[in-house]
Image (cartoon, rainbow, N blue to C red; front, side, top):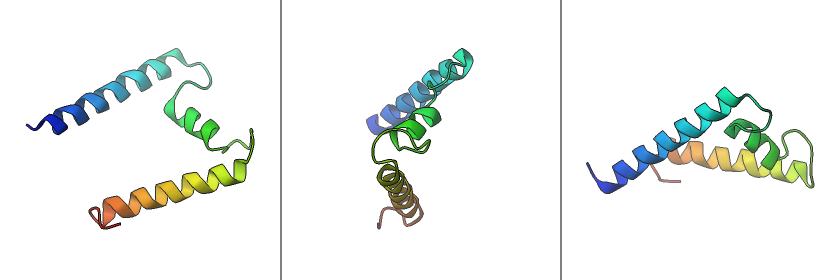
Length: 73
């Protein structure tokens, strides 16, 4: 197993641990989904919510294409 594979597995395990703790805690604003909604203005709060939503959609569109085309995009 390469060091990068190990690093990615550690990263995934860290995410699972953090998200699991946040779900168990059940406070508002502690999960990744809630942070993304806040950071990208999905709730309409903060400055430039439309611009931040466009950035989120553009980033997700790029990621989808990147994964589907095996890195061509």
